[in-house]
Amino acid sequence: MRDKLNEECGVFGIYNTRPEDTSKLVYYGLFALQHRGQESAGIAVSDGQQINYYKDEGLVQEVFDPKLLNFLHGNHGIGHVRYSTTGGTTYENAQPVVIVSSQGQMALAHNGNLVNTKELMGELESQGATFQSSTDSETILKLVAKNAMETGDVTQAIKKTMGVIRGGYAILLLTQDKLYAFRDPMGLRPLIMGRMDDSFVFASESCAIDSVKGDIIRDVKPGEIICVDADGIHSEQTKVTTTHICSFEYVYFARTDSVIDGLNVYEARINMGKRLFKETGRKADIVIDIPDSGTSAALGYSQASGVPFDKGFYRNAYIGRTFISPKQDMREIGVNFKLSPIRRNVEGKSVIMIDDSIVRGTTITRIVKSLRRAGATEVHVMITSPPVKYSCYYGIDTPDRSKLIAAKKPIEDIGIEIGADSLSYLSHEGLADCLKKSGLGTCMACFDGKYPVPVEESK
Ligand code: SF4
Image (tube, rainbow, N blue to C red):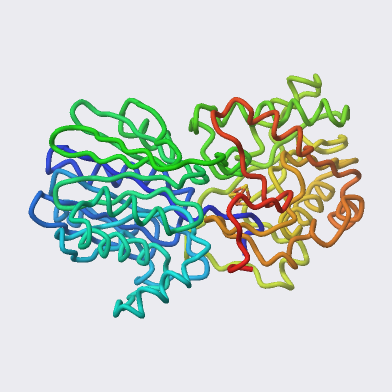
């Protein structure tokens, strides 16, 4: 099991392209977002008359081949990559979710998590609705379809739906001739809009728009509903309170080459490294990263401290779904199939090692051990976020609170348990300062338990 918080999904959509290009562009966009979900992938395309779709378990390149992409023919399309959690990894939970409504077919791709799904599902079921999956995404789509039947207008139906759903969401909804993009009123999950000639593009992260050579227009605003149709873009703003973009997007989830809500992820991570030096003042022979999210922060630490940066690990990037993970007893003797220390760089040296977070503490213990076996004389672990003490309910897979090492132990004890000579975390204020340049306020609930959307029902 990966000892990290996991992003649950990524979405990508495009409106008005050449029919032969649409599914391929969505495929490339999803490929750029693969880090946000590796369990399933799906694409839905509309030719103006009909929505065709295909989805399955697996990586984007495992699910789709050229024949399938040619079958998905049309001018508009959306796609989804998913990391599954409670819903399981079944086909039914893959997205986009597609239904037939009073307004014709609708397909929906969702990144995030609602905190009141059970209540909403119960209401819909009492009105006769049935569900194919266990996802909140199907609940949202069924609500939009029901509201569209009542209002006769999809934008108004989305607005009505946003009035009752609670949690984090960034959603793309495709009808036969329109594409809608909407984001939760707090802006918990990211969503950005771009342009390619006469086409409009939406994605969870800017790196996906860059990957299809689109130009960034702007982020979808918290609480905004955007509709793209043959006349262009129409925006409607719903009520927004205080905004809370997920701080973990900058710490770990997002790709280093993305910009979210005006803040460059690379720059934010460089600043986290610089701030770590300001807070700890620690010097050593070398500073190394745990790739990839620790890399920019390690560079920042080096720039601020003058401690030379070098690569501490070789990272094996070729691990597919069928890889046979070592069983518990083999893990205990230190098998680490992903990261291998570069002995030449660490032997005989005191090392500062930068990582983004500690969840259960199992992986980092093995990594510290492996550095010592490679000859490091001291291992000082530095983390670019405060201790993770609370679970997330807004679309990030976190273990139960009882499994979070920082919820159970003080920092000194964690340092001893993972075998480090010292352990330092970035302070809450330090992280907040590094994220100030984002246009939004930040969610820090997994560090401080201050949930911007109440979660009693999910606990
Ligand atoms: S609780 Fe943590 S992971 Fe979840 S949205 Fe807030 S900052 Fe992000």
